[in-house]
Length: 155
Image 1 (cartoon, rainbow, N blue to C red):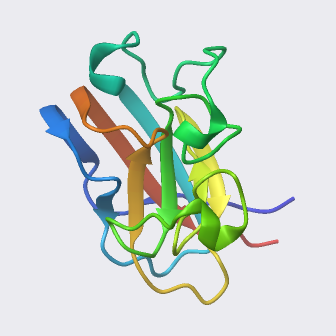
Image 2: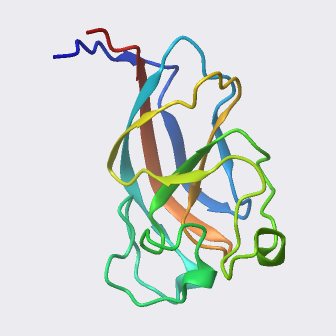
């Protein structure tokens, strides 16, 4: 069984009573010294300029929405998501990927929700970016706190 000792990476990422217009927020400038991340999140925010109810890190599960309005098609609207590297502003067009849904130009997005453990890509050097699963902005954040811990499991 692997031994995992999580170490907090920097201070928790927080946002309170702000409107977010950018697609991505810089959570950690440089990931190093770990092969895996444990990410925990709490908070509430409102998507789509108040057209839907407030949600938290797990988003609005069960709300029917067109996949082409989401960054990650199989993740609920409003869910907290992340990506390794790439630009804090860049989304590519659907035509560039041959897909009907927009794709990230750099860095593959992944769902975070209230709890996530993920492997950092081998050889990766760069930032961890956070966002909300929707192509519609702005997002009105009441409160958001994200804890990020890293580990290199040993067998």
